Amino acid sequence: MEETSAAHLLVIGAGPGGYAAAFLAADLGLQVTLIDQEKNPGGVCLFRGCIPSKALLHAAKIITHAKDAKELGIEFGSPKIDLDKVRGWKNSVVLKLTSGLGQLCTMRKIRFIQGKAEFLDPRAVKIEKAEGGSERISFDHAVLATGSKPVSLPFAPLSKRIMDSTSALDIENIPQKLLVIGGGYIGLELATVYNALGSKTSVVELTPNLLPGIDSDLVDILKKRLFRSFENILLNTKVVKVGEKAQGVSVTFEGPDKKSSTQDFEKVLVAVGRKPYCKDLGLEHTGVKITQEGFVQVNEKRQSADPGIYAIGDIAGQPMLAHKASHEGMAAVRAIVSGKDGFYPKAIPAVVFTDPEIAWCGLTEKEAKEQGRDIKVLKFPWAASGRAVTLNRIDGLTKVVADSKSGRVLGVAMVGDGCAELISEGVLAVEMGSVADDLALSIHPHPTLSETVMEAAEIFSGQSTHFYKPKG
Ligand code: FAD
Image 1 (tube, rainbow, N blue to C red):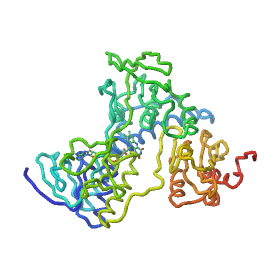
Image 2 (image 1 turned 90 degrees about the horizontal axis):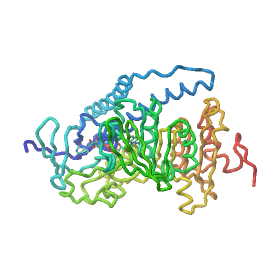
Image 3 (image 1 turned 180 degrees about the vertical axis):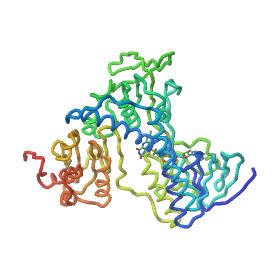
Image 4 (image 1 turned 135 degrees about the vertical axis):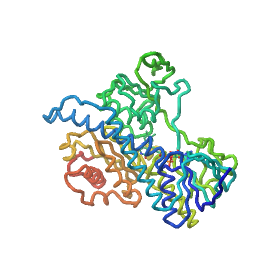
């Protein structure tokens, strides 16, 4: 080992958790070293997750909006897709944002090392540098933020025809026929992209519904549109065999009736979940403990069983989302600096960027009912929203889940085109302990989709202006 150095704070993994932690620590005066295998910070989110997928979903939205314009009397021809340019544009978005993060590191005087870190003991790591050579770094505190990896299916090894989310984002071609295994948010978002680009897209999901765990009234509205635009959606169906052939992939399904059937596809995307990435980190040389689910065990400060080592983001538990990682990262740094702070969110929002989108925060209706809570569910259908009508997108619903006595807003959930941008009002309401009347009496601009939140909340104390519900 050639070099040795020391850091107040060592952050391993520069995804949205790791870089947010490193930036705050540097702003608070700590001497910070940030390690990642990539050339710049960004992690899965920027290189092969949130950002490239949303860039492609934007392209997909332009195609579907142009198609839908026919209903308004405006007809465009079929889109001519230059895949190299689409890919190039998506890559330029990733490069712009990740190189910007690299510059923010330099400006904050954070030492960024491209390399792979492994613990030697509870206070030191060895870095195998990408440029060659290695370095031993000792630290006062470490933040572990190594994220997660896609779960694979043992009988469907990755290849040119069998993709995971990372290779699917490269859109090497537009397959004639695509099967997406997994009806979770990653599978459905990528299915939306390929379907808009022209692939005949099918989705297969093991459980009885798409997006398991999300309120079914929201999913039903999405499903209605997906059933129209996708080739097929198979629910309650298990993929039991995947075999690659010269011209495609042959997939055997076992349906709800236990009968099996086989179909051929040009390509298959496996999107069956993600697992925390704790491998090859030398954690056995530390006191860090791993839970049964494979996450690093942490307390409310995001401190592991080894008091000098903190863990945040996908490696530290559900929900595996970028904004949760960033907030945990900042909470961990504040705990390291002050010894006090912790991570106590009341509402972590989640968004599925399909068409229409689904977004929710706080307690869902399903969770509230499972907990036996005495709640009022206030629903405002987008068919009653002037803005939704002007946009020709009435396929939406906004729900407020409120305590039936106090009116306290426990959760907000919605489905509809563009609702990802609306959910933050719900987060604020839950975090601030607002009651439904706070939302109802706050004047929302007209005509906007945000009015659907206000009008749903109005139902708590009577009627909403634009949606009449008979009493009793
Ligand atoms: P990650 O972003 O996973 O970063 C971990 C980093 O650690 C990686 O860069 C890796 O190279 C590095 N690393 C690992 N081991 C080592 C080591 N030994 N030494 C050095 N470096 C190491 N979330 C959302 O909130 N919104 C979305 O819209 C969204 N869309 C997604 C779409 C897709 C297709 C995917 C796959 C994920 C999406 N996610 C989304 C999830 C989101 O990407 C993750 O929740 C988020 O990236 C987790 O951040 P993190 O900081 O925990 O780690």
